[in-house]
Image (cartoon, rainbow over all chains, first blue to last red):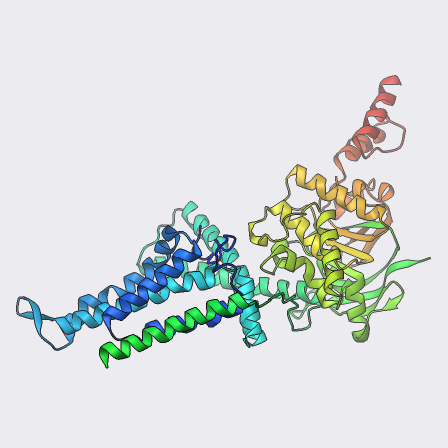
Length: 254
Length: 274
């Protein structure tokens, strides 16, 4: 399954899937709480909480692991670089370069809370169809224009990817090999430019199709959200977790 | 005379100066099915956009007797369903159900009515059970039928189809042809822009030949035997008819020009009997 399809497993059944999407989005509060943590031990607890919520959501770990590999590539350098740049007691010296414990700890904290936050995104956004999530965001006050941009971007992302793949195949069939030289970049630029022009033309045709069916600026939808006691209970648990992590962090760090 | 579509002196020029339509006049009776034929650049798609009020040129367009103007546009769009050539242009919502419900909701129908219309439209096009699917995951043939459902759910009196069978395999093509036949039997007025002349006898009672202006408009069986006229416009004559026109010209066949396989078989029997 492509990682453009964040809602590829929204059909599964789990307590997270059954959660009212509006409250589910509000639980982003836990993500904010995790990224604000300062203690490594509490950050690891935050990561464990994220993993637990992921486990409850029944989303396949392999799917999530595949998705977090890119953020992980971005986060991995922190525990490698910060020990060299943050002052403190050295635990290792290489050719005169000291690796500080404080730097390592800070790097690990940054990596842990980053991974925890990314892992948590999957149960929140991957357990409801994307359009449901966006409609829920609208009902929470997301402006109409942004709602429509999100919906249409998600709908046409795949088409754009197919068109780019088709353009790449067309280039390859005529002997083009991607490289880093100026000629390659010029060809890729031209292909991308053509893709943008085609996208622009398509957007005009889509707009016409919408107008022909009575579109006047607002996207009609049947909001069928129904909040029940158990939705609020789940929200309270997550809120308690978010506040608990902050409290623990305050006790540890001071 | 009870016209569904009346076009009088319609002209349209694109912003770059290209003349797309030049004094187009025609009238289509309610309940009839008309094929719109013409070479590339003849103005077919431009004409179709005028019938839904998406383009406004000089001249008069009347739908079911009401003249198209700014005030009547919402009414016109309720009466005229326009199905675009590329279904990906028409299926813009994240799920098929939302796409099919888009028009009815814009019309202000109640949720109950929307549900009824959506399930009816999906049933007509044979996509019941796929309501929750993302349009992107449908096959091209399914997308074509889904695009038709998005318009049918508005229950239009007039249906405008732009190349409904293009890029379809024979089976999907057959499904679309029988769908058009079914809608015609229900009394819908249908105007279909099409390039495949072999399909025209199966879907249309009349043919409108367009080349920026109306070149010919008449019964299908009269227009599609005018080989010189069609070839002059760069169009084909249906394969079966083309063969029998040659036989007729050569004096081997004196009868009516056949258009279907069964008609051709009985015409061949006549030739053998002679």
